[in-house]
Length: 403
Image (cartoon, rainbow, N blue to C red; front, side):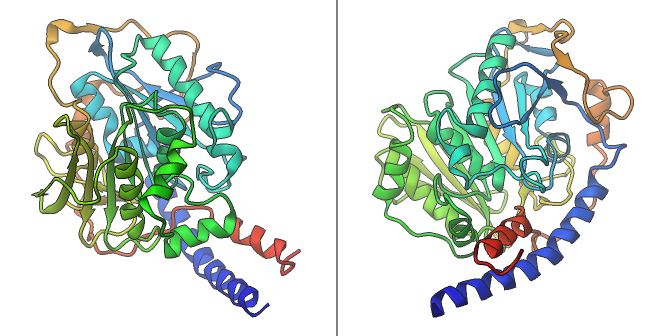
């Protein structure tokens, strides 16, 4: 009983702390995702049964290769697909390198703070809930745009990062690679208390135990997706040790040792690499020194700078979106003769939900992107990135402390 009482007291402290910060993050997100913010995404309906009740949005550049790659992007809590695209710069990368973007967007009906439900069993198992909805979106996009099935990728931030880990584990045959930003290992949590433990304390398991969770998520036995892991060393929302546990999980799945094959400094930050016996780099890890909770950006004016700083989108001098695309092999310039101009998007695509005027042309978007916001202090406190208030309330009700 004493331990239960301590746990409830801790939950109550978390609730008071996170109610304050969630209000602050909500106000900040509202100011960032204003009605005048460009929205380059187009909503798609009728992509499948959609058991997870998610929205599907896409971005298709004016010119793509005959059989383009597909990048699936999963936003974090309090964010929208359009807001995360604007901040992360993925559609600018798609313009430059000719791949298709697919954004899954959470609905407030599923989670009041628009977090993907990475800790709910009904949403993180193969052919169930949100994971199944995202898989259906991928299949629809592959057929709609003649996507190269060997070049399908997924990335996400925070709750979206945890859902990225879910997609890599439950559908490893679908994805060539994934990038987990400020996320958690697959199946770190399957309940509310475990979610708290993973986020705020971290959960330590052996590499074999972590790896077994991935292997048991499907009947797939390889080859396995490549994985890129990004985390800020000053992240107070998702404890940085989670990055190490993700590495343990995927090095075990790939049959690699815990020690990296090589290490280097990229744009001032440490990068570690694990190389397979074939010579291919299959796992990489970036630790962004002093960074809080968010996606690392470089909003400078050079050719490899992308995005716009905002809540959970932190200008720290390195573009994670560009570096991830490079790790996936997407930055190798396509031969212009192999690229085709697309006809207007099919009528099955619904109008964008948050369009401010006409969608900007590629050159207009590039011009907007060239106007950079001032660099943020990378050591500024992070905001929460999960519907913690709702989760804690449920826990307190279950404990009989709230009606």
